[in-house]
Image (tube, rainbow, N blue to C red):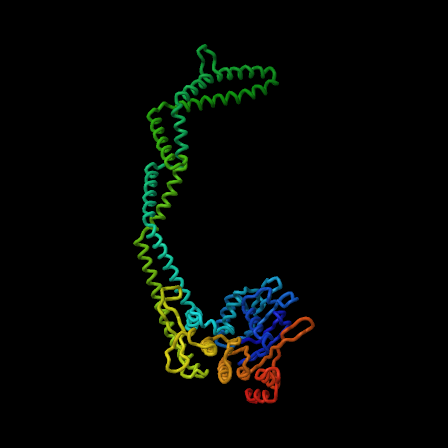
Length: 556
């Protein structure tokens, strides 16, 4: 349950420390005093939206801390969540804190450890259930009616599964429809790709092949001149010419011998000898290389013809595909991948079979959802009808229709709330037949009943009793008090009949401090409760009559 609430510099709240008791607690006060600001502050600590506008004027930051104690059915779930998210809890106490500065920056903490607003929200949903003052208006919307019924039936996880199944089915259905629409274009594209891939596969150009055959062609086409040039170089180095001139190698060897003899006479010529010897060795290596080259190079007109034919075929394909010859192997890979992708996507029979499989899976889940909704609709209709009898709608009836609709992410039916205000008439759509007062009473009955079905330890009702009064208000007060026997109930109310039923009563007021206005909250004792209930009954002027009536409501 909510044990304490600390609010600092929030809207028109300066500094407030509240301590709550178990049971039924009410907040009352004049219009504009800031009753709902308390609920807004708590919602902020529970991970609700907030920006710089919540910071009190002139303050640096708004700071809200809510302290909870664990004692109820939700304990196990909450402790498991705290352990999983590594937020240690000592002695069953949970501190949830939210700070927003005047630049709109937000910080969140759980038990003193930095957290995210999403984590505050997730934990807060296990601890507190807030019913807003406009709940009865949302009941007129079909989506809100469906969400309320599904929440009552505990179908949240099933809804996620159903939505996923619907998305998978419809996504494949759209792919299949697009393929059927573009079937002719797809067929033409496939034929084009098949022809292009066939041409390139037949040619079978290997990576690097173009460079290899261009080099080979250069050698073959210049073989005669290459042989002639190499032989001429070999002759100059190692063979006598026509005039019997000694070759370079012989001359260099003779020169080495001559210088060697001179070195014996004058050692200063030794560097010359050392320079000539490497030259002789290199010339000898050149002879070996030229002989090897001449042994490998030969005139081969047949091979030259083959290479030229291959080069022409590759050139022709390059022109056809508007690519350089060496780009053809990569183009084959690209076109083959496109063809495979198109072949996969164009298997219409397989697509249809998979679509039917996904559709069947979705419909099975939707049928299960429909059965669960029907069961929950019957139970909720019976419970709300019973509550209506106590809320001055004798003979009235509440029912929930499940109207078939096109398949959607939430199922195959629309949820519609129906109501008959009195006996003898058939229930009709809530939005068409309920008056403002009836709608408020029905909304309150639904809120109380749906809250009874949850394990949430703290329930908050923010002016959900608007639009009712008199004897009905007294019944509402008793309903909330009875609800408070099993869990903590906090209620912002303007009805004395409701406030008088509370176990704990806070009065909210505005005070002027210099040039600023702030909200103040005071816990009321028995005497002050009489004054506040009397004010609620009679307005600003409190009389002996209103005090007497207040005592009667409080049974004092």
